[in-house]
Image (cartoon, rainbow, N blue to C red; front, side, top):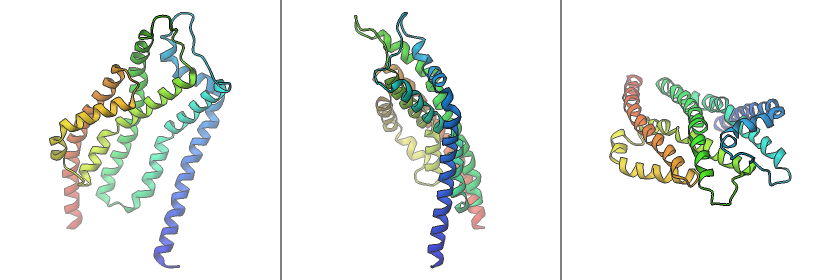
Length: 248
């Protein structure tokens, strides 16, 4: 066996080890939270339940929905909580191949990505959900009783959690593109009108068909894009200085 083949095998073994640690973390959290699945679902469903008309409740149309839906909620929540561990395992796998100045930049970007993802989820729960679930019952046609299905509600919640969590990663994506030299802050700034249109289209596709949630996603995405441009310029200059020092 050649040295290159041995190196590839070593990398695959390490990758398997990193993935296994991430999966074990998720499974442990599922086991810990499963006895409280009902309470967790009730907490997540609070924004819609607090806006239901008097005498109405959420419903379960599937035979196994009362069991499967809270269980699915636990699995998704376990993945969300495990994000720091998952990101760390990815970082630990790629870090040995980075230069010292790249590691100095990569670690803050990694930590920022984790924090921004959680901020996006929190923004969805505390800001978007109360507005959305006040709006939706109010547009129900006359004679229609608004009683959301628990499984359908979970689908929308998960979609919005990940939509806002990933949308809040825009500064990280912009910074990486600028620091790696794929593009420049000036080039991105010159394409701002097209990027804003793209943000509006993405917000329309990722959110339910109501203007409030679309605007509440589009505005933070635009602000975070501008923030990413500003930070990208600063980090690009530092990265270039690091490259010069490494060359010396």
